[in-house]
Image (cartoon, rainbow, N blue to C red; front, top):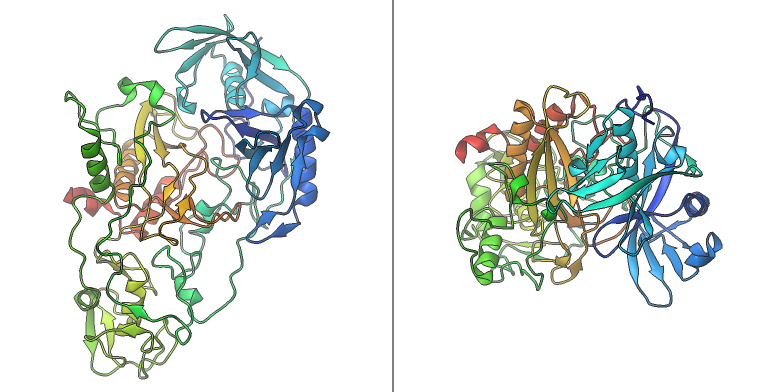
Amino acid sequence: MAMAPSPSLVQVYTSPVAVAVWEWQDGLGTWHPYSAAVCSFIEQQFVQQKGQRFGLGSLAHSIPLGQADPSLAPYIIDLPSWTQFRQDTGTMRAVRRHLFPQHSAPGRGVVWEWLSDDGSWTAYEASVCDYLEQQVARGNQLVDLAPLGYNYTVNYATQTQTNKTSSFCRSVRRQAGPPYPVTTIIAPPGHMGVACSCHQCLSGSGTGPVSGRYRHSMTNLPAYPAPQHPPHRTAFVFGTHQAFAPYSKPSLSGARSAPRLNTTNPWGAAPPSLGSQPLYRSSLSHLGLQHLPPGSSTSGAVRYRGQQPLPVFLRMLLMYFSLLGGTPKPEPQPEQVIKNYTEELQVPPDEDCIICMEKLSAASGYSDVTDSKAIGPLAVGRLTKCSHAFHLLCLLAMYCNGNKDGSLQCPSCKTIYGEKTGTQPQGKMEVLRFQMSLPGHEDCGTILIVYNIPHGIQGPEHPNPGKPFTARGFPRQCYLPDNAQGRKVLELLKVAWKRRLIFTVGTSSTTGETDTVVWNEIHHKTEMDRNVTGHGYPDPNYLQNVLAELAAQGVTEDCLEQQ
């Protein structure tokens, strides 16, 4: 029953159309596809409403599923929040839209199902169905689902699924039905694939080295243009998606109308709250510790091999210290940070300060909104490495608007001074390895990185301290080739994770949702076996690109030597 392997399984997808599968997520984090008929109805409504937006890129309407299937009458999909809402109980579930090539399993109407305890058949998520089809097409009778985060093998010959830990077996079956709906991909000129407006791509589009940017597979949400912020005096310096964005923080408003900035930290005595979130497990924790290879990294979850578990309060304390990259250090005085990295000029050059847009020979545009006893309004200095000149008071205002971590980043060339840290919430990074190769890296195995961040409360370093934030699409799985360069990238990603640079809290560029966890300018490959969206393999330039993006965040091989 095995089919001839398709030569296009691992090629970059260049078709102007794709197959759309809509799925909902249950309480255990598992995704379930709607039927082909329901997906066709949802996709039709989605395409019709695509231009009816409000706010920051959200859709304006909901979709009543009962119109497609009477048994789903209680359910509606609320597109602005990407949730399925049950009207009689109030239960809400996340939904997503996943795109596949036309030759994929959903495109041919193929669904794989497993037999549940009550005797009903349950469909695997669409990506698992497609993966099973690809492996069977290659002649693999025994398929390991570990690359997709499941602790199961599927035996095509015996039509069974086996739990690798308990050896418990279930029946599986392959069903052929109506194909899932085909939709048109609208991409910008020159793009070959799904046009990407995901936060992972847009957050780095101004400066990142990746030339082709497409949507990643973790959220699988529609592409919309980035929200257009009204122009103001300093937006181009501090805008989240602009070329001179030294920190992922809210923009400084115009100097003359901005509230007065105090150079002391009003949150200095209050460390970020851990909230009431319990210690949690990744959805891959069922794979077992035996799957964690020597040298695997976790941050935010502390494990000690061969020792008794620590008390909960100690684990929480160690988690907090781990997330901060070590024992908290006394916060440096802002004025001293500026003096550490600059050389004051007695004669200012005849040019503008690109922070306040005033002449360097004139007073700083932030002189009336920043308190400082040590730096005067006319003081001008140049950064010691790159020699770019600014009002020292403008640099102070920029620093006070950031993390106040003792580091500076030149708003002109983005040279980093000191050790840059981010605002990533607490979470866990896990690393696994398996033997299957990535397309384009057939000579080695694969590294699987799993990031898991729970919902929580924003700390003082976030846009809205004390307000809840959401964490959609976690755990997020990312892939690297298990070769020398891939392992180097992995070690640098561990450093970036400890410095809280992988994610941040902000506004999603795909959904417009505010106060949510988003990618932070370091691209990850979230697809393994095809490059439908540009966030998969093969991609011969990816490792070099991500090394450049890590370097732009101050994470280089020198960091590994210092460990």
